Length: 209
Image 1 (cartoon, rainbow, N blue to C red):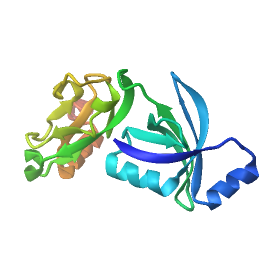
Image 2: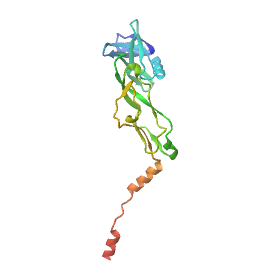
Image 3: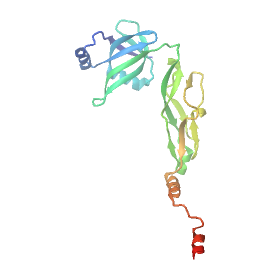
Image 4: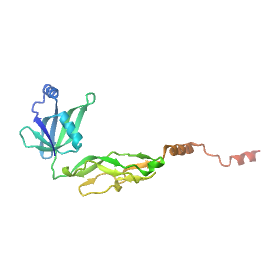
């Protein structure tokens, strides 16, 4: 479990918040079902590094001053789009024995056999909602697409189940599919847009003559 230090933040005046940011600290809050809302400040770069190393669903032991550490997960954050820096964070205090719902990224592995025939791999979704205890949340959900031919599809229903977590998505949700080559698609579009042949037009002309 990763560790991150935090300081209490009792003074919420704007001038104090600006000073914190000048010192490299990011204001935030900690809250949870069994944890009173608490204002804190953390080192932004340290948190970003932790998330890069451990993943966005990492369980963090947050050491707030001299208090006992609180086990948290990053629930939300705000970034400065220009400076690409954290400006605020929300931590959710978790109960390690209680299941929670989180979004887990999908990791596609393998090269589909349909690609050798010009097929194009398409991935409509990139993460799935999973329910699990905090220490059983997977880093990602691996999906092997190597057996997919043109027109084949992998849906949520095709994913392997596990006792550690449950996927909360429609079973018909498409995870990956292999589309036909673009040339074939273009040919189909041309056929669909072609003017319909007027059946019987020639016969009508002969009768009028």
